[in-house]
Length: 175
Image (cartoon, rainbow, N blue to C red; front, side, top):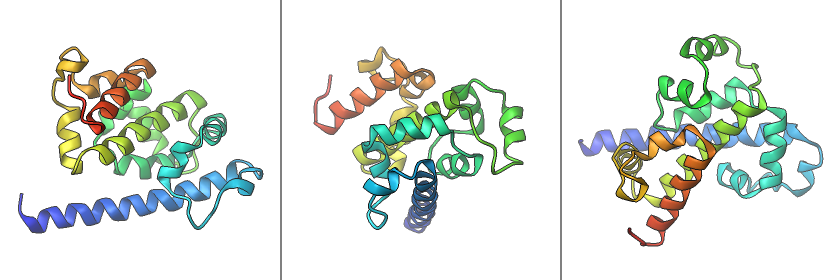
């Protein structure tokens, strides 16, 4: 890949991440007035969201809009088919929801979207580049029973295994 293409991909990712940060802040401030008390608006970003488990619980109860989901989707490596599989809905259902930016996902789907966003966020922190993380996700891992990490993301137990493996990689522990 040429240096120009790498720069363009990075700039696109940065732009998309900025959009997610802004949309997430707007969403979080709508969840509950009490969240305004402990959220520093100037410092809030996508990363902060994953650190506040009570806020995540409130978000799951409320459900996220398709508009926010779409912004999150843009910064992940997952295809429309992947998302449909992870959310256990048909691709056609997702496409139908895409016509309504205000569509609110059910709590069970919101939880899955947040879990996948968290994996994506942590994976991008652990690996030097987004492409390296995406390659790792789609490559069989000895530590994960020779399964591809992406295959384990269909349920919360698999997600926890993937997060634990990312944590080991982050700390330089290779099995």
